[in-house]
Image 1 (tube, rainbow, N blue to C red):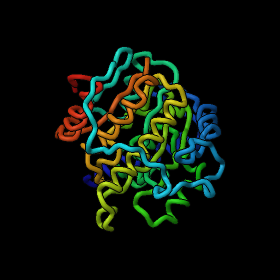
Image 2 (tube, rainbow, N blue to C red):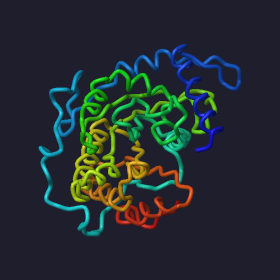
Image 3 (cartoon, rainbow, N blue to C red):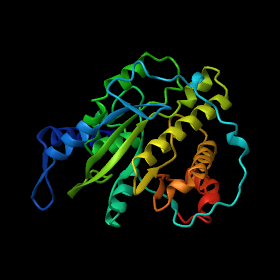
Length: 307
């Protein structure tokens, strides 16, 4: 990223924090848009979710399940069968778009009720590097919404991962309901805020894991369990739409084909629970390589993919 873009994103982040602090913003029509109640409700509703149990805790320190203690299923990511799946009343798609702009598009389509999006989290820093102008998926969300004050409510999540030495991290999650989004992905203020719930979860840092000699099958198995827990939590919240993506396939270095296959396996397992739920993989991909991989793997669920 060049200096000018980083400086721009840093300024947007600072403005967003100021809006959150004030509890309102002035839109392009010079109207005052109140946010305080929406922000307060999202922060108060934010819960720390302990992996594998999906239980809500005010503190997760004594309830963290290490990956070595996770129950393993009897199938492997590399050997799934492309059986036919009845996708009647299921909408699963792949779009070349950011998470934030995908959520905005869903609301423009009059998708009501609970929209849930996966936040590809930093395990150690709320909002990742958004305050310094970084621009990965989590930073984009933090700049455009009131997610940041929700995340800092769950200090135990970050303190635990800071103490951990393993780049596998944990299956713990943060669930933040009805977070107001008030910018698009470019930083433009919306005329009115829209609401989206977020599941915050860290992918395995596969690059560091490989450097430390952790085998690929351990990385895949860890990601499989994590994605399973993410989808379980999402479905338990009765969403109208779920926004996923190429989870951990950026700087963390997870193999896109493996991650896509894990999602296919888990969605197949839960296909009956997906009735009347729109599932979108939002993958912002300049060269099309990753989105093509996901589209190919997801054909088992959605047929030919139009991106």
